[in-house]
Length: 153
Length: 412
Image (cartoon, rainbow over all chains, first blue to last red; front, side, top):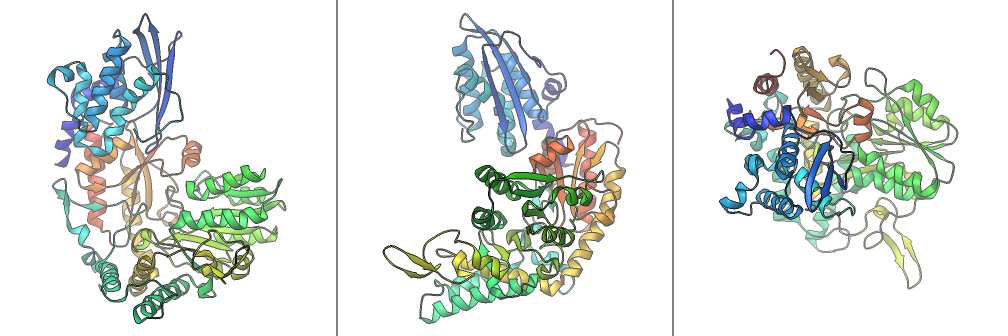
């Protein structure tokens, strides 16, 4: 059955993050925010971050999307919470690079924590954007890059 | 050429492949269909024997290329029963044709306070050109709503179309809900109020007989690639008197009568609307696609697709946790089946189906206002063409059941 290949993408841990999302909701003391859309499917992520003393003190998201985008947002928010903004931006860069097939060292990949699992999205090119959307939102929110949304990243 | 519609699949080499180690069931025909070997051969023949630029050359190849291009125009004319070949304008596709009407007729005839009426089920290509025109002109854009069944609400149409209405632009067949709209009645209603009507035939012309004179539409646009032509060619039909009254869409070569330093005059229709070198091979390929469809018979194409819907729709509706949009009566449904599995995002469904060799579309189908109206962000969509088989339908239905099993959705 062809669906056995699906297990490579939808591992238990991914389904678990999607079905029991972490950090889903709204912040009261948000300092940085970004909303991004995936124009191919209409998915949306609204990301809120509370930055204090140069660290991601708190982070939360709302929005609708597929299993991959929800799992990714869930994992990303877990992974960056408590990190310095520099560390969080570096993680976003590593993840985005993986999505465009730029290789990183084992040491770099370990920085992503559980979110590393989703870098296997490269085997499903049509779904790369689902996984990267929340990381792009993170990057843009931290850089306060709120210029017109571009889809050419 | 396959002499029986059930043998037609043999003409489509692309459909014989396996994807992800499974038999391919290509069910994304509402996005684009596949081309038979006859269309590909026509392109090869054109490039190997006749290729030249048209209308200007006096050499043999230029004459042949011109003849091929104009023959294609006549084939389109007869295929949609236009009154004259000059009423057939070649475009890049359906979107291009609709933009042409908005940018010329619309720009010339819409003024502040006028109304443009479209429907809530429009594809963005028959929505944004009118929305932006209305914004530019301070005109009002009004939407005809749906019935509970997902059909165009003609009672609402009668309320929305008024004496202030100048343009009514409605799809002939929905790319999501799988319904055919009563375009002929809408045309009559528009004309009673002195408005013109624009039909979007992208999902109609490939699948059913269309007669633009019987419909009495003023403009009617469609794409070639959804009816087996190469990509990048389409048609805009327009009534000759309207086309003649309109300003050009683009300026350049081929579209002029006479050019001086300070002024120019325009060629007659259709050339006035065909600036620059056109997609000549595309038109030749469209002509070959029309020959292919004529040999099958458009009634037979329609019947075959209806048989596939009659077979598939009740089985799809019978799967627990599957929701199907548009009418549930197969007799009212075209070969476009939009659906969702409850609790599962359509992108996940499409990836899962792809692993089973089933190619479908997932997303908002370029109809976001319709999605909003239905309270959805996206749907999965399977869509048939005449070369599809019951085997394709069974593969779809089985893959949906397997997907539910994989994601542990409800009972199977």
